[in-house]
Image 1 (cartoon, helix red, strand yellow):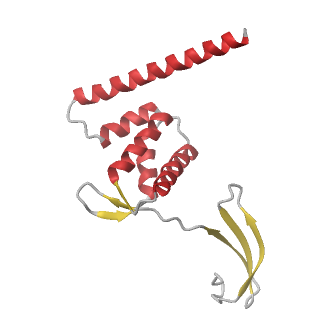
Image 2 (cartoon, one colour; image 1 turned 135 degrees about the horizontal axis):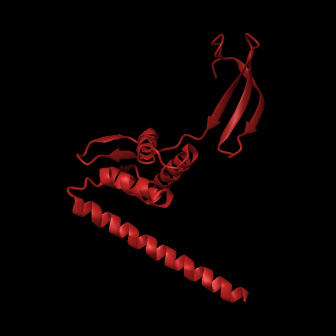
Image 3 (cartoon, one colour; image 1 turned 180 degrees about the vertical axis):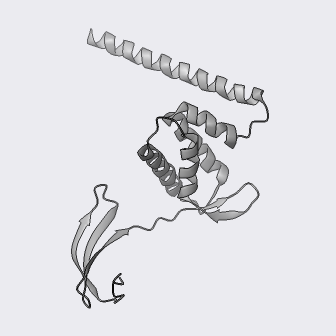
Length: 170
């Protein structure tokens, strides 16, 4: 590791600690040449797949593109930056777990849609309207109707679960 002050390569680690989430090691180092101390962070290099675009082009996976899309969809919504980061982490982890060398951009788009549906339904509709490129109001209304129907089904199953819980308690 090169010293950021004198650029000498000879240094020693004087302290190592895991970060709270355990994914990164923080190391305090001391340069043997100038005796100044500096901190480095070490983490596993993640191998993410190449993204295959609709037109067949391939490009490196870019986490920032997902964050930008989520941020835009969640603009002026009660969604924290931390929630956007966690959502991006889940999408990224799912892609890694697939183990594919290449993944279609549509797979990433659908993963974003699933996560947004759980996170914020207005943001989901915003993202869907751009991602799915609705051609007219009928397509947009169809998506909204499906969203409302899923919400009703979810509310119905939650009410039934509360009812069963009440019966079990009584």
